[in-house]
Image (cartoon, rainbow, N blue to C red; front, side):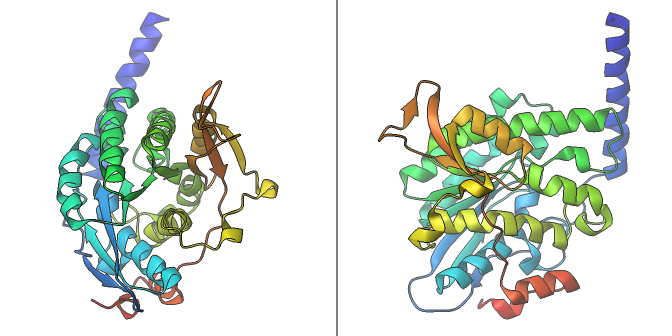
Length: 322
């Protein structure tokens, strides 16, 4: 058994090297997406994006195809007021890099922060218990300054084509373990999470040529649009933009209140789930830890011009006021 285990480990090491060679070093830079999105009356909402290359939007050509820009345009449409976007994400960043990004974000007094991080922690074999510590610190710092936080949890790396089996199975398992750990950490720190891996995994696996960019690792414009559509309802909820009736849980969709550890595991395995803190009987915690609301939010469509541009592979500049 020991020899078999050693052989399997050696095989995965070789496969990891081949996968990295096939994927290669990320080329180019993400398009700069900072600016004002949408029109309307009132003070602009300030949105910052933090994280790694997926948060930065690496893999697309136009700034308006990045996830931050797509969410900003969607929030502007829902709120009826402009959104000022600042993207501070860094290509290649691991979760430990969030602290520096948060320090750059705080002087901007953001109303909300969108964080997408974790993939590089998995590829660099950072243990989930180590990875989530700087995430907890980042969320707490932002919340202390009145900033709402939505975290898109670690994507499902088992959908990346250059990664062969059995390494692909291991990558999927590690991704889900980190996503669950991120969920517990973020909710405890006062934020909310959206499971990207479980929602986007089947779509990316079924349509890899459409959902991935040319490097076969980062999402395409269509892939980022899917991610933005998943996160937009949670960001709107965090900012208090939905009517009270919109915020009511829907038992028919499987919404429920659970201990956060159980909710985190379910979210990592189920499509399009949000996890946020909840109260039961006026209490934050029960016998099994903090209570959390598990929600299968309805995926709200992005503004028409955003969807049309993503379908055409073009820009949504018409939806923005820079």
